[in-house]
Length: 397
Image (tube, helix red, strand yellow):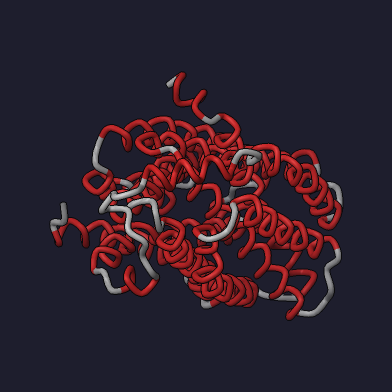
């Protein structure tokens, strides 16, 4: 483990921080302002879910072609572009304009540059440059996202609850500005690192240069895709409407902020377990278990209302997020190699973003139509069971 952390510590820190700052474009952070945004634009749950879904869908379509640039341009250039994009999106939240088209553009930018491109940069970089230690490296990057989940809602809901939404987003802009110089510091030796990476892949039959069309034609992609996008659909839908869910359960916003500490803590436990497991066993054989914690969390949400089970729900929810990210990230590297990993993960991220767009949309309109947590939980359980069953039924190695 000591050798792992000393191998390329600057790159590990880059992966951690770029995924951390991607938090500003993630649903868990945006949803903290769900009520403020809906009140400002006079939107219902379903209407805001629709705007969110369309913005996210649009970002997923563009991400397919944009994200594979990481296979073709310098990582420093790619990182700078996407970080400045997120900075502009956060500044757009500071200067809100009361027109729904403006909201669409800002949500699109947050989702595209934050959830999509920055997360893609961190995960692809970790999977690409750490070889047999990619599981642990992916865990380090994911830990950055977990740190965002663990601390940003807690800070926002406990220390900044009395300030204007625009002011909090302004602080987010300032933090991103401080991150930009670090990109060039952490990636100062990127050219030599990438040349060494290219040399190591010479004559490796698994690491072929693949095109998007090659992946789309491969049936393995569709067999494992449901495992990868089920969690974004369910988790994003539940998180986006978490204020409604907490209201129905009788849980307060303070409980929400405090419960994220449990969420983050158990996501870290998931990372600590998941990374080493990936490096020891074939991911394709173990990935079918990755949605089990999410299944248990949804069942608890369906059956119990006490504060104790709120904490259990958030613990399992966090554990699933922690263990699933390195599993899913390593899965595709194991199937297709790392030479064209940017192209593969561009499709994967687009699929995940696409699924995360439909989660808030579907759950939002179910809420508007009078359906409650029971219906939402039943749909979620069905998706998990089907997604897990497909690779088992096909009996792929």
